[in-house]
Length: 186
Image 1 (cartoon, rainbow, N blue to C red):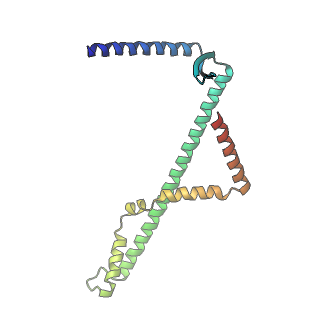
Image 2 (cartoon, rainbow, N blue to C red; image 1 turned 120 degrees about the vertical axis):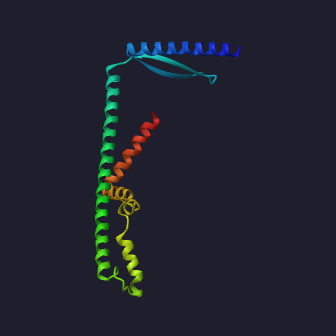
Image 3 (cartoon, rainbow, N blue to C red; image 1 turned 180 degrees about the vertical axis):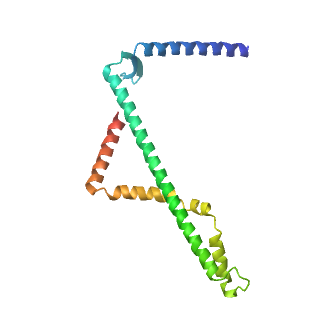
């Protein structure tokens, strides 16, 4: 009996989905928009109703304007991410070059102090070990541990806000507050 109830329930849900698809097809075919309205009665009850109205040219323009604006913001965001990525790669290359220079200096000092010779002076043993570590360091690992992306983001924000005047910062804050109030009310 339970399986029969499940089959019946499944068929009912399938029928409801067909009705919903037909309803949405008619709305899309007739270029209708759906508006949900609420009406509060004196007794405190809430009546909800759905109103279908034809879409106007203004509605289409609004939809396209929002789509274009969202696309513009997405493109700007992707360009910012790409520029930050390029800055990080440039900093990585600079860091690698600095590490290579440091390794060459360590190698020259290692040869100058005769650390590779058999007659190593005891007082120089510690310095020679430090130079060996300097010569044999892993460049990739050292660059990864520097967290260059944090430095790049920090420098980007610092450079961006350094050029702004106090008046500009106040106006940006004011516009942000007004915009958020407008969107919260709607």
